[in-house]
Image 1 (cartoon, one colour):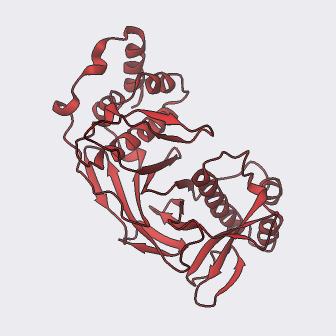
Image 2: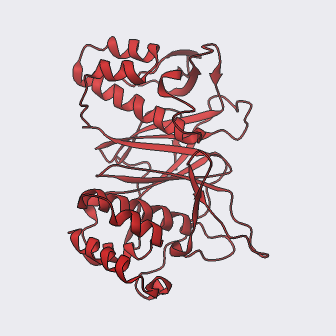
Length: 329
């Protein structure tokens, strides 16, 4: 299916015609606008690539990309990987374009830049009559799910992983290489190999979301230098990260260098998404001194095929909270 789009991208690369200036309003319907997230609210959008079957739609999607994005896509190997990468770029562009303030934002006109640590952000064009929104976003994708998280004023990091993901290495050998000693101890105590694998994937998802939210790169926050823990709210105590119990718990980060110091200014949510993936969200609390304990993350989740359909799925069986304080909207 995706070969048609690959050929079209190849033609664009060779001709470099001025088709980049096309007005796509006649080819694609307008996006449904969405209000910016409120304080301590997170918006989460996702696409299932297998549900995007139209070659015509994929071709239109490719025309939303910048010349550099087209070039990067053209050089990727494998149609499935190219399709996932295309949908990731389109999801970012269309999601950000939905948050209209004083003017309409064309998804194709958006420009991006990277911080010194490589985290992408919108490169807004400041105008005399328009102030860009303090919007933060982060993306993650597998071959079977593409996601974008959005907040206002505070950094966000997300990660999605397939629940059936298999590891090339043995679980504990993998954990000893990347995880903290306390997390390895937790995994070692699990006798069931399948539960052990699932718990490792959940931990990995949370740790990656945290590093992406911090935005300083993996070299600045190696996985084995911090521990993910969960605090049972009703008991007021701490225990090792464990998603096998149903008590409401707040996920926190503990520095390996200073075990008594819990990094309280980050808030987490761990979800079972679409019955097939784990999704982790990490956002910075607005009060950098630590924020209020026990305040849930306000979360709205949409499943989308951009320009075709949007379905609000928060509060349904498609979004099942696993850990973290979460209030679905």
